[in-house]
Length: 211
Image (cartoon, rainbow, N blue to C red):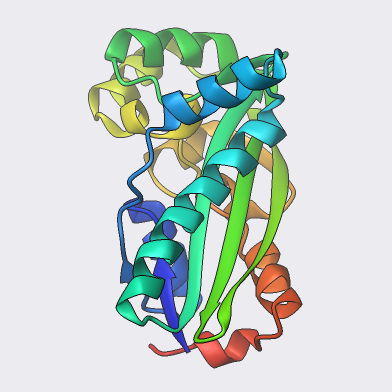
């Protein structure tokens, strides 16, 4: 079965490939900040992290699924979004070295939660069917990380464009003591959650293997 990953994330693509799936890649045309702002304004409240990531995962998958359906695509479209929460404060991508450095000083020796939203659309000639879920993983950072190590890590540029300013599967992994939950959640999306959603849509996970 054909699979499309509604994401430009190298980490999510790597996970798909490691799971035996070579997906088609499509970039969602979604203004994330505008989507969240509109929903929060309409509901008069701030979305919880789990609601935030699920909303964006659904909008991303919906956008790509709609465009592909118009092309005659038949298969699965997978979308995702992630946010990191530490002591009630939610962090997205830091984008600047200054923000990344400040976050690492704050995260050192503490435990946070990575929230990951997942959305799967099964596009068929008869219409589209969807399933969604949120996965969470608790991440514990080492307490003995030095200022020099933080500066050196930030200087690599790796933490600037990832949720929470860290990775578990690359240079940042050495500074993480433990992960509670599906480890792939911290990488970009929970493979076990995606498998369950695919099954809920009546598709055998092994039918996606094409590598």
